[in-house]
Image (cartoon, rainbow, N blue to C red; front, side):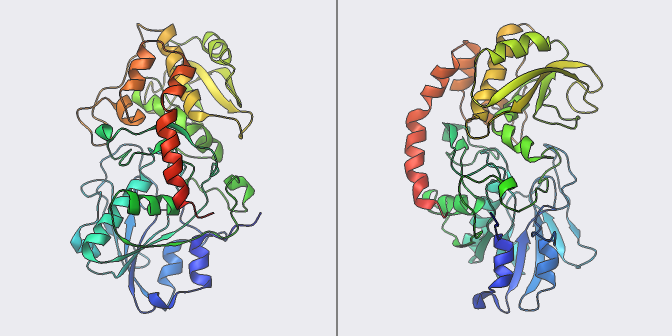
Length: 389
């Protein structure tokens, strides 16, 4: 399969409505075409419009910032001599002044297919700002790297709305960033003048490795496609004092803590016979972040079958078993988390407090999975209206 990205299609079939426009772009280091040419270079070198502004999401336009940092990294691009504004820090939504020098704002970001990945909310808030200022908004679409058919997890309760969950969607949404823009714009009342430049040739069941498009890690702790595969469940570990493998070469694949017996934990997890996954006992020593320089016992999540693997269920299983085996040692992380100072981080990640309570009560995984099916079914009906592929 050969996929042509929205970024490439924009310059292959340049729309006349863009001619002479002043343009900005939301992007980061992963915003490259199949020849590894960066979007900023393509925009700056195009004589048919004028690049005036660049915006960066969480982790910065260069992708150099670590997790959950308060970033206010505004600077001028030394090569193109245009301002670069951070949208993860003092401002998460472009200010009127930031938009004054542009007519069209483009967005070319790599999403990883999970509700809590903040890039999709950077896009949504920028859409709101453009709607308020009468600016056009254009999404340059890319494939969902973990496929566009599987949808999993509870739909977020609006009472737990945050910057890792602005809208009621499930943890694994199975949509492209362009499709999400359409859904956000119509269903949640943004009302932007929105256009999506589709990625040509993508089939919904294809993972990025099947498209001819290279993986470029979109954030410092998303090094491989395998990381993205486990992320919609393993990210829940951020809401605990367990290590999610930050500070190792395999973040989110490795989970553990110094008090865990890896052989016991892996035996209990594999006993659930969850589809498409094996939990291998292991030891690791993070170089930074939680339990830095301490030997941790835990598991590595090995995806054995992409089609049947349910990452969110696997993440819940890890939390359930660690909590059950080590009730005196396990602890939930305390606020603040992602600009939220009152709600528990695990509830923010889960988009509800009911699943945390289920975990604490030792509820069976199947019962938890059944609890979100009705809401998920309603989301799937809504989602169908916005699928572009």
